[in-house]
Image (cartoon, rainbow, N blue to C red):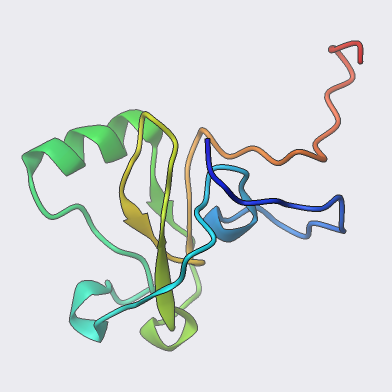
Amino acid sequence: MSKNKLDKGKVIGTNCYNCKFIDEKEMAVDPKELNDEGGIDPRNKEEMEKAKKADLITLPGGSKADATNKRFCCNEQVKMNVTVRMCCAYWDNVGVKRPWKKT
């Protein structure tokens, strides 16, 4: 699990940066690392398999200019650098309400 201490503030939309698995440390991102929508594509076969299993996507409608840094996803199934333009099937947040779960 991430060291990220998300508060219960208002979350609008889902992306890696408002997920409970994201590390707080921002790192510089080289524009050459980014795809045209501002995400980071898998660099090798192992990353491609993890990305496929996690359905790690780059959200549509963005650009490289939208991703000024990258962070590390601490989810055991992902463990890759991501940008604010990305999201996956493991996205979660401490404030999420699940009516089927009793608290």
